[in-house]
Image (cartoon, rainbow over all chains, first blue to last red; front, side, top):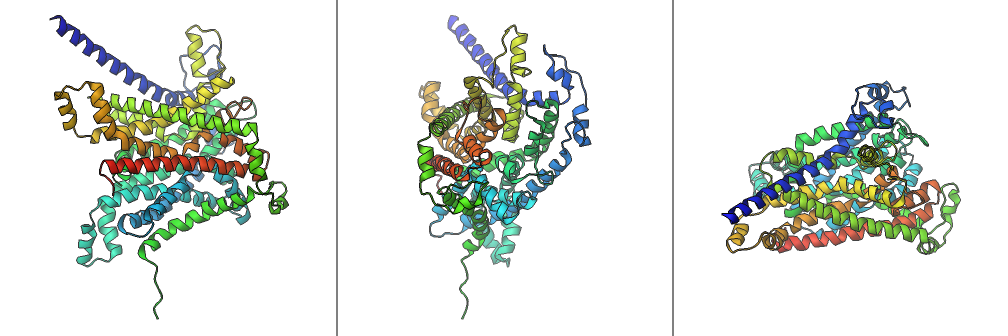
Length: 287
Length: 297
């Protein structure tokens, strides 16, 4: 009897520990983000209050100021948002096209030095953005595409292609060769066979590669901060710094912009979250 | 006479090769060249003066550089190990959850969506010594002192590591969780019947199976270790008094603030080699682990 009781107690203890551990983990993950969202709705006086005010009041001032553009601080958020969107969407689209054709080449053809090509491509992704930004800044300035959408798009395409190749390669390998061979026997050209048979099967892999490319471009800072100068091409991560002056920081405004930045990424990720995990594991383990 | 056509695989790879050559390879060659010159942005003519390995000798004999280098290596070692351990722990906990697992997994993915610059800003706000959440909570609980989180050297390093770990642990957790889902049940049950303790079955069955997943996570992480630059840049900018200076912030300061491009590019090459070593190491581990599991393509 006693042993039974002890065993039951131990299980209950383990269960509680498990619950507390999970709860703490989720707390640590959620609180920082929620704190930002909460503060974007609080008036500046309250954010700066000493001693701290724990019961929040509600105001849309920061959002109003942000969207009014020329408001307090005068950060042209709309332009930044538009720049970010143009650059991210275009570069993702191009990177997917280029990466997909590269991934297909690695998955379907045998050629000499394939593995070294592959690792070589990956190494280009490993070059730190800061280290690349120094020479890229000079080269782009010489060519005259600094501070343009085109320059940034070009840089992001190059940044995203290797990883896209890695992911799509893994996915195309999953598809049996017989599929496109059958299509070709039925009279498709190789091109048609790809778009009509293989592409639809690999779609979830392409979707996850697309998400990663989009997130990388949307969130990138090290390159963007050097390759963009004016309102016409600055992206949101760079724009975030507009709220910091020499000694003061407009916390509320920054929080509002942060929320604006994270919302599209969150929505997009919710839509394709299933593909995201599948993409990473398939591409990596079985590739 | 028919013209020789390029093989199909090359045609398919060509766009990727061209883009990468234009945007990464050529600038890197240029920076390799300029790291042998005293190039200054303010004086373009300095680009044509060859000084040999002067820049490299200079940074290699510079205590500030070595301090930043050592700090970067230390930073990466601590951060990557903690991320792996925490990720493993979180994944094991999540695997035991019977209710609401999908929701929890979605929450777990939040930090992956955050821009590093946003993570930096968020923790700069939270760790602010005057109005930050951490100090406010501490003070409300009765501690009287305001801890100088981002002003004191050691605390600042801790805050930066905390931010970095917050951002990247979920990559490990999610990939390891995916590995746990894919794991066959039979060996574990057999081990239980044979009388293995939970620790033994974890150590000898679960962990070996998870290894490839851990290496994927490591490889993906090692591709952009330099993301830490964004966090440090916005949280402390390398300060106070260079206490949180990493290789990357030192490089960008030398290049953009002091305009000494040649010197900065020489540092850049050291950092590139560091990143490449990390990546190659984990790639090889990954292929070895794959081969062991018979998953090699």
